[in-house]
Image (cartoon, rainbow, N blue to C red; front, side):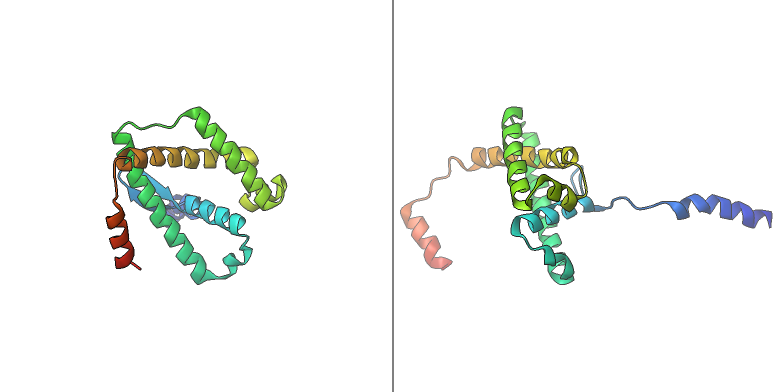
Length: 165
């Protein structure tokens, strides 16, 4: 009886634990959380005004998989950018974040509707999107560095067009 009571007492904390977030993928030393994918889906829903998407499980699952793949690709690019010591200018991040937040408020209809969509205060929404904006700037810089010297002739362009028409 004492062993049973002891087992129940030890197991009780495990039963009362709640899952707050889960890891969707690991890229290098970076993780992608389920909540990050959910945030991307919410942003997509706001931008496209497709609130009925949540009632379409197959379409929602496909969209989540697309965002996960995009995030894995971004993490890989960010790892390469870190190796090349590419950083984002804070002033540029602030400027782009302000533009994005303004556009999101306009798309949602009001600041309060945006808060309701995300279920979080504006400060937390900004914090989440700040990292996204910073990452986007870093990835753009990496792409510019890698592909700025790539030159394509008119003939190559026409051949590509003919091949993939």
